[in-house]
Each structure stands twice: as C-alpha cells, then as structure tokens.
Length: 111
Length: 116
Image (spheres, each protein chain N blue to C red):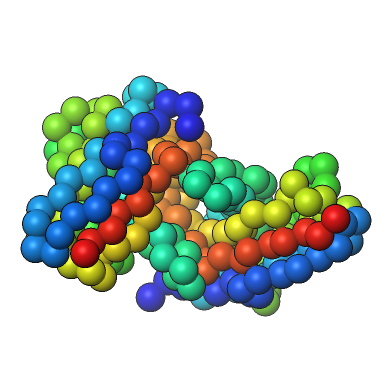
C-alpha cells in the first residue's frame, strides 16, 4: 500500500523467542496503530502511537511492546512469542482526517 | 467495553443480487462509521464511511444506511459482482483518526462470496 510498508511479510519463529515487526510510513502522519487479525475477531488494537515516543495500549496489549523513535517508524515487539500470538499483524496510519491506511500485513507463525 | 457486532459471518450472493451486512454498536459517543474491504493477502481498504448526522450515504453501488436510535448501520451492495468477493469490516470511532480518540473498533468481519 502506498506510503506504508510492513516488514517482514512472513515470519516463522519458535515459542519463547523475541520478535520485532516493523512499520514504515512516508506520509508523515502523526498517528500509527498496530492491529492483529484473527478469524472471528476482526481486527483488534494492540498498541498505538500519537507521536514520537508517545504510545499507549490497546485492547490486546499483553505480551507486546512498541517503540517509536522516529515519525516514520513504529516497531512492535513480541517479548517472548507464544502460539496464541500466531496471527496476521497490520499497521495503520492516520492523519488529521478520518480513515486509516493499512499496510499489507505480516503473517506471523509461532511454532 | 466498546463493541461493534457484525453479521452475518459469511454471505453468498448471486451475481446481480443485493448483499447486505449489518452492524450494531453500543457506545453512543461513536461518531464515525466506516466500512473496510479486504482482499486476500492485502490490508483492509476504506470503502465508504458515514457520520451520524445523515441516515444514508451512497457511493456507486455501495450504500450505508444508519439508524442512530437503534445504534445500527448496514452496508448494501447493489448489483453484486464476483469482483466484490472479499471480507468486509464495519468499524466505529469517536472522533477523527488524527486524534487520540480516533481509535477504530472493528466488527468481526463478513466473508462475501458472489457467484457468477
């Protein structure tokens, strides 16, 4: 998707290992979000950021941390991956108007 | 907890038919109601959105109907086409996306299949 890139696109990791997902934007938007998508649950907010070094928790934040040292980058870290964190992770950005722009997602499998 | 409930989970429609997806919300402070369309392997993309000051919004074959008193809103896809086959999510937020309030709460999603 234009202006927002997620990496990696796919990752398989072992239980107990730390994992970091990256979201990079070129739109200079202030707000960035991390969601996870699971069947039957839609998209659920993990963490969001409203500026550099300003972050807050969403509804499913346990086991996750985030960092935003630059406007363009928002990192999601799974401190010790568990099988319940197998999911598709989406980053989104928003500016002053309504509506989000989503990245293409990262499919994470924890084995 | 702020919830948005979406139904049905899946929907099969013949080409040319009308697809209808419904959502209900609880938080009366919500003032922005978008619908997102997602194709396999892609992120959700904004399809159409409505504010509670109007009861209906139409963009091409897509229409949102909004019932503030019932706290419900729905997406109607007229003349459904096979290319409309995708997952649809309703969502709601309080305030614009560019504010600390503008966190979207999503419904569970509806998988739409349009048969040729």
